[in-house]
Image 1 (cartoon, rainbow, N blue to C red):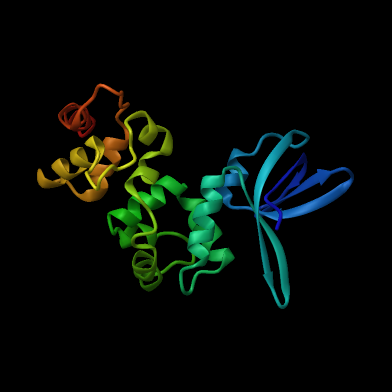
Image 2 (cartoon, one colour; image 1 turned 180 degrees about the vertical axis):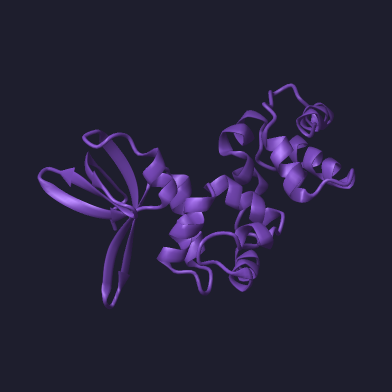
Length: 202
């Protein structure tokens, strides 16, 4: 298993890049989002990779972050979603955006991804339920700042704020997005986070 490749970006195509490492060119399949975020040809770049092996297929799939790679692996575990479909989804959504859609059970949004219909989107929600968390969706760096790890099963201040917004009538997706937009500091309790999130609603 190749964890990552680091080399000179030799060439890019609609759905792939070629990385030159010591004179060997590695063809890596990528999403449209990765293509947009790549540095100019000739730059040194690090690509996190997934090696896909089947009887008649051997391919490398690449991502700029380990987070996107982790989400790609999760998507491959969904019945009916192959590498091409998973890349299509990650071309349209970042890993965090996709987690928010999954947590808020927003099949309609997921179904907008190329090659993903309503049935596959519903199946994805079922298969990935419990495999993504609010902390991951809002960002691990924020979770660390506010002690995002849940202790003794008690929800964090952030979780409380999301629940409060939902209770006020906002959709789970809207609530998650508003809280994720708040810059949370150590001294903020759930009420302070809630007030800051409400300002993001307007």
